[in-house]
Amino acid sequence: MPFVRISLPKKLSLETKNTISESIHDSLIQEFHIPEDDYFHVIEELEPHQIKYPESYLGISHSEDIVYVQITAGQGRTLEQKKKLYHEIATRISTSTAILINNVIIVLLENNGLENWSFGNGEIQEPKHLKK
Image (tube, rainbow, N blue to C red; front, side, top):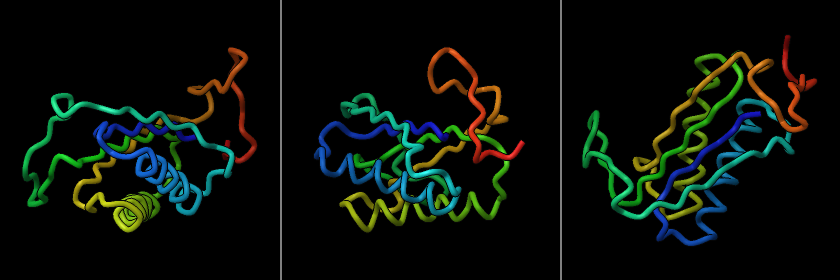
């Protein structure tokens, strides 16, 4: 698990949208050590009027190609792992698409990972790769 919600401009090509999703997933495998088949993403395609952002925030400029990445994951990663994840996601997206690194916004939401997920059957599963 994590669950990833990607909100981005509708105008982007399907190839770009898929590359963004794959970049995030590959980064999660590398930095959070998730299983390869732990791939739960929702891509929200938004019209320009549905995306709000400042032209500059904290000294970082943004444009109409802004991409929001919201990751819900279980707790337990270190600050260093989180820093590496954010860097890896932004770098992969910016090197494999036309999206600039400054237009990748990432928010990580954490929960306890064990009792806050159901992957089907209306039950709480206990994935073997999670520490108890």
